[in-house]
Image (cartoon, rainbow, N blue to C red; front, top):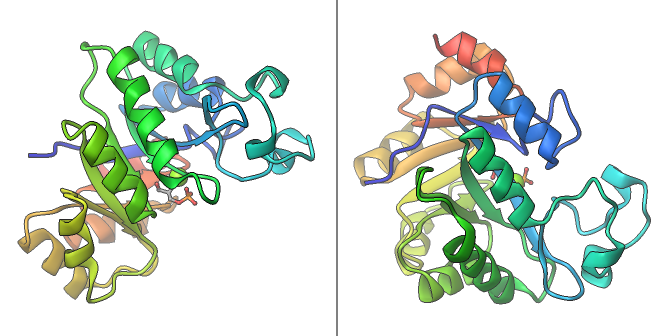
Length: 230
Ligand code: G3P
Ligand code: MG
């Protein structure tokens, strides 16, 4: 049974500090989050790093693709996955690890990420939750390390959601909270899946979603949502 906190800090505390950085994870903790969500992709030389976009431009100003940049040439502000895990150990943070592959690297990104988790994830922390929009990444994660819980990420819930979740052995659905309908929320919860929503920064909206049966709210502003949920 998957046990998630009610609130997870999105990319750390992205409302306050540059997303997917060690400072952002520490800020999420300071603002009350017990877990953070991060995006993991591979550098040109196959090192797992924490970065959302395919390009480094938006968050670091460096106009270069992640998939074409070796680890040694990354801007210092971009953490490796290992550095992020060390930060979580120091802060006592759990993590939803989103596998966010660059095109064509769906399986490799997942395989390297779970190998890193097996090597580095501290026993003192709750087991991480893996998630991805890519069925191929979740299947590769299941094949390489079935012990980690998986959630299927869906921007919109369509009728094939359950078949897709079953095909990759997912125990959770992580979906766009702005598009989730009450009947879908009931359907997912009654089917026994954990239900998380992203990215909800408004306290009243978070309350309404929890009222619909949502287990976990992923937010850029964990303090705001925690306060709203009481
Ligand atoms: O994992 C939840 C959320 O982060 C998914 O969308 O684009 O923000 O990674 P995105
Ligand atoms: Mg993400």
